[in-house]
Image (cartoon, rainbow, N blue to C red; front, side, top):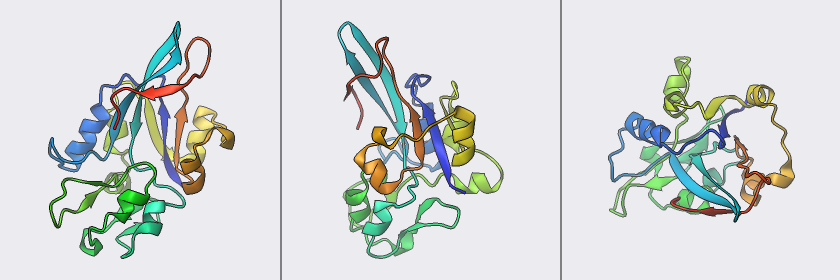
Length: 195
């Protein structure tokens, strides 16, 4: 069973509550890394324009590039399907950060010895039968979490690989996004304040 996230970008208002909940859950300070990030994007062309917001974290890929790039095994795919990290094995080579096409592994600073942080999918909460902190915090319920097959059934998703990015096809990302639309349909997208 693969666990994953479903994100409906048509519902997200960009409030960043999920980002704050994640930082709070992992006790990350204001200037530290963000394991969940929200970006804002403009789409369409005048006069059919729109804006959407996208929440992004580790996609806990089926074939994670970060795990393949880690020389020490500090990054690993656990039995529950999540991608995890062991600080004690990390040599801070930053290969995980370089190889991840989603920018999920983050470092708080360039100081020697600074360890990597990333989304853990709140595995401790999952073991208690709770949702990850980010999904529970969303005031508009713009995204959901659960077994991927249940999310597909619940949201009537179809996996059309022609719409996946090259990175998603190579890593088999475990996240599904409802596409943003303008009145005339899906259009070109450019970032506004994403990182």
